[in-house]
Image 1 (tube, one colour):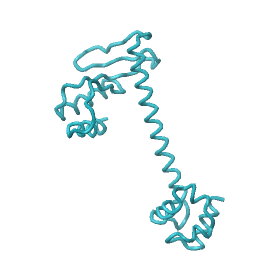
Image 2: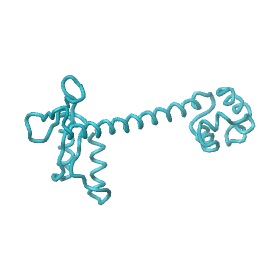
Image 3: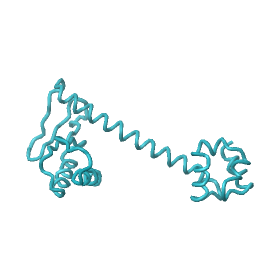
Image 4: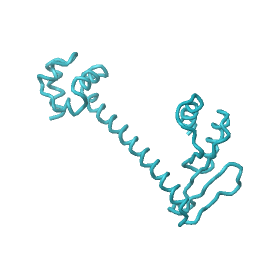
Length: 165
């Protein structure tokens, strides 16, 4: 939280991006506290902060809204349109984060498939991926095509080919 807010709002101070009127923080008092600290460190005091936490039972419609300087969280009625908007924003943020995590995991899995082959290190892996445009291209390449890549001997090309077939 600290790193993301610092990076984003330092850029804002340098003139990049638009200044929001409101920042919704996905989390309760702890996450809101970090956001308050970061904004104070950056000297930003004119943007409203609201922490959105699932209620005690973690059910939709039971969300609690935390605001700086308020002792008790706000709890909107389950049919309140403002609560529905907040839920949609939170769900979209979750969807975005999950998609990013899946993409990152997918890249790691693809890269490690080549690294598991004895004799293929970082440099050879990079050469293969660059030559064939990604792991899928490497998987579809013939032994002869693999052997044409810098650093890949005919014996290693055969080993790579066998790993994927």
